[in-house]
Length: 488
Ligand SMILES: Cc1cc2nc3c(=O)[nH]c(=O)nc-3n(C[C@H](O)[C@H](O)[C@H](O)COP(=O)(O)OP(=O)(O)OC[C@H]3O[C@@H](n4cnc5c(N)ncnc54)[C@H](O)[C@@H]3O)c2cc1C
Image 1 (spheres, rainbow, N blue to C red):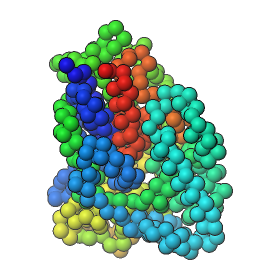
Image 2: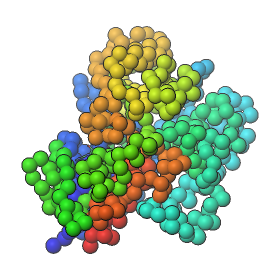
Image 3: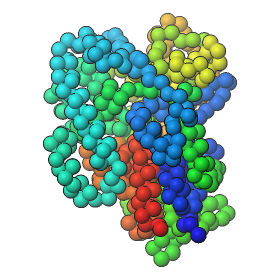
Image 4: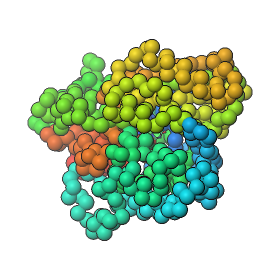
């Protein structure tokens, strides 16, 4: 009889873990509390619009290619992909820039908006690429259970190139001065849930991901990845149960013997828990948790967010697919996010308009818009403040479009911190996990293995390698490998 493993959570990490475990010959049951797979990347369909509810930046395409190839699939047979050009637009307090996907053109654009800023851009990106390639080849798949994993010749040889002990901001300034170009280089760090000051310079690799590898779009939207992974799960024989919320564990003799659902216990030989780590541990008795509640309180989480899914009955001019509204002071919003939690007076926001690229996500002649305003995880939702932010976003969008967009709004849905908690059991409503700060990187992140229950493993954006769709997929693979080595 093959061993039976249960995977909790149908986000990218859980789907990835389930696929690898099933392919290794285990019987696998995937339990997801929501009615569809995808986790933070679920889909919302309304009034002819198709919204991706979470991620919209398809970065690190090789991770997706590798995942599908591991199961004998070609990504291209599952969904078509196109590279966006321009990659994205940044709106500054003064002016804006559409970042070309062609490096020489981009470099000239950057030099034009900030003369002298690109003198060392090649060197900066060369180091970024070196870090990325080393990480992908040697480190990203490590379980990070101990620093000893890094006592390997390839890591020791590379140590000098990884800038482990500097923060990103300080490091970036050695190559690129502050100003609009510096701000563009700091932007990819936001994906890691932190800011340039508290993120290790190692992550300048994200600048290579951005500029070197590019921004891509799966036709039909990010949910196509979820559908592709679901195809893989079917192929390897994973039994998928949606609407199946795990409420607790049955344990005996230092092992998990089953997971508890409403009214029943499913027996199993092991578990990979790929829901939010803190909530999963909250279902264990205190003495069997890896971390006490105070641990999570001390951690730096990626922000929560106010999200808007907006459908307009006409095209909106003067937008690209990805638009970063950095047209208000950056530092004040960052202060409100991480240091003095508050609703920002003037908010930075990200606006995605996928109908600029893809006619299938909106009715003909209409526009599909997703807005993300990052907010501190320490702020309880406040209807009045949220309405103020929404007004602000729509006013700035109207100013950009040259007419009052509100008169053309035919669909509007708001999503906030409470929704993250209700839908994903997200600790304090974090949107994308635990930030990759200096003290929350590698072995310093929550461990993939429960130290007291030998057959309980964790995966997902709160573990290694960190937040983001590609890291979540990798995390599932690492956890599955660990679980498979334990549960034979
Ligand atoms: C608004 C937003 C924008 C983002 N933008 C990007 C982007 O552009 N590019 C990018 O790469 N990344 C982006 N991210 C981050 C990325 O989406 C996440 O890091 C990734 O999807 C996390 O995957 P996961 O599997 O770790 O967690 P999740 O997606 O949260 O999956 C965990 C699953 O576990 C389920 N679950 C939890 N508890 C239980 C339980 N008790 N029983 C059963 N099921 C349970 C949850 O319902 C959920 O489906 C974004 C995230 C958000 C929220």
